[in-house]
Amino acid sequence: MKKSHVRLAAVLGSITLATAIAACSPGGATAGGDGAGDGAASGKIAFLMPDLASTRYEQQDSPLFTAKMEELCPDCEVIYQNADSDPAKQQQQADSAIAQGVKVIVLDAVDTKAAASIVVNAQSQSIPVITYDRPIVDTPADYYVSFDNEGIGELISTSLVEGLTAAGATGGVLIVNGSPTDDAAQLIKKGIHTGVDSSDFNVLAEFDTPGWEPQKAQDWVSGQITQFGSQIVGVVAANDGTGGGSIAAFKAAGVTPTPPVTGNDAEIAAIQRIIAGDQYNTISKPIRIVAEAAAEVAYAFLTGNPPEGETTLFDTPSQLFTPEVVTQENVKEVIFDGGIYTVDQVCTTEYASACEALGIA
Image 1 (cartoon, rainbow, N blue to C red):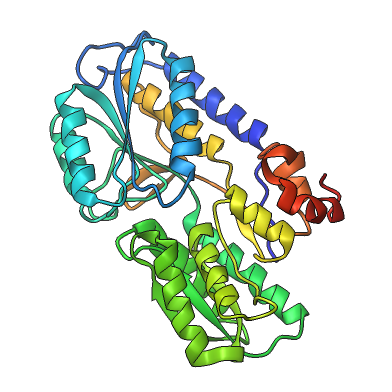
Image 2 (image 1 turned 120 degrees about the horizontal axis):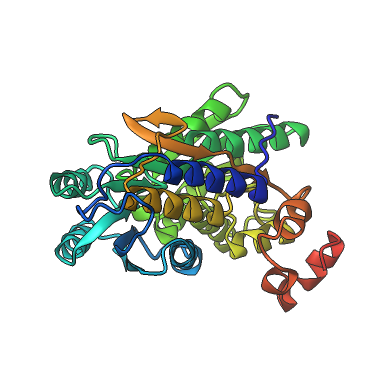
C-alpha cells in the first residue's frame, strides 16, 4: 500500500515561506482596488462553508481560518456563513457578502455546479474567489486549496481491500459516495474505484448520498443489508458521516460483527469508532493545514500578490495536500502523537478501556 504522510510543521512552514516570498515581490492593486501592494492590508474576507452535517466546519475550519487571518491581518474582518446544505442560501450569503464589500471570497460550495454563478459574479466585480475543499469544475476560480480528493478515495478503498484480503474475506462491497452535486465527492468516487475495481471484490451496489447526509446513507445501506445480507464483506464510505450511517445500519440490523467500513475527515466520533473496532479507517487531513493555507492565500490576494499555485486543477491554480489513512494500527501515532486530538477529547468513559488496550490512555 502506498504510504502518504503529512507533517504539519513542515507543510505550514512551506506555506508561510511561500507567502512571505510572494509578499515581498512586486504586486499589483489589491482586490477591491485600494492598492495595498506594500503588504498593509485591511478589509473583509468572506468564508462561506457548505453544511452542518459535517461537524468540521463549525468546530475547526471556521475558527482556524479566522484565527490565522487575525494573525496575518489584524485589521481584516472575516464574514463566516454556513449554508446548511442549501445552494440557494449559499448564493444569498455570497450576494450579501459582496454587498458588504468583501475583498476576497473563500468558498466551499454546497453545489459545485450552482456555485459557478457565485464565481462569475464575484470575478465580474474584481473579487477573487478561492475555492476550498471542493473544486468548481465549470468556471475557473482564482485559486483552489484542498487535500487531494482523488487520492483520498484511493487511500481508503485500497486500505479496505488490503484489510479484507489479509483476512481472507470473500464476497462483495458496497460503495457509499458523497453528494452528487459535489465535484470533490466525484473525485473521491473516482479514487474509490481505482482501489476497488482492480480487486477481487465485486461492487454489489453503489449510492451517491444527497447532501452527504448520514441518515440517507444509513437508510440506503439498510436496504442493501436486506438484499445482500452476508455477501457484504465491507463498505467503502466516502466520509465519516456516511461511514457512521453505514455502521448504524448494520447495528440496527443486528449484524455482528460489523463489516469493515471506511471513512474520511478524522472526526472525533470516527476516531472513537476506529478505537472501538466499529470503523475500519478514516483519513487524517488536519484541517489546520487547509484552513491556514487558505488564509495565507486570501491574504496574498488581499495584498495584491496572488500565488501561482503548485499545480493546476480544472484550469485553476491549486495547492493540494497529501492526506494519511488512519486505522487502529497507527491511530495513536497519527492522531494523538501527531497532536490532532488529545486523549481527553477522544477517550471518554465509553472508550476508555478501548483506548487503554491500544496504549493511548
